[in-house]
Image (cartoon, rainbow, N blue to C red; front, side, top):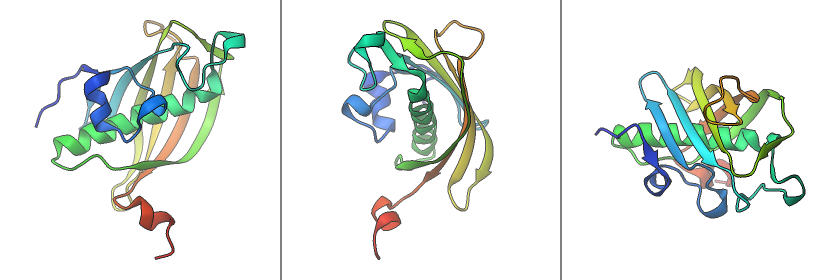
Length: 162
């Protein structure tokens, strides 16, 4: 199966478990399932769950969630291409988080890029180097971090007493 590079919100929602106000991606503009890279965007508005009216924006600390959903989109696209259903995932850690701005401004389109740098296929654990740009055409990221994630086929068993 082949999936086009540009995936808009209404189709993208099929690749992630996030719904409603917790769905924080507007589109994917690039994905490479062989090299494990993805670029996505989010149009910041007052409807964002993290929006703070007194600053007319979203605090940059929320950037890890935008980047984690970028990663989730990549794993959902990858699983779909491989004929599997998208799996729920969990953030295991956010490391080396650095933000050069306090807020991501309202009415801007931020861009997230993620590149996998560690893979444990047996345990479904992956780590990504992530960058967030305050505007999609910026050359320098304003937030950087490394995010470790884990996919699971059975989220209930992960937390249950079974």
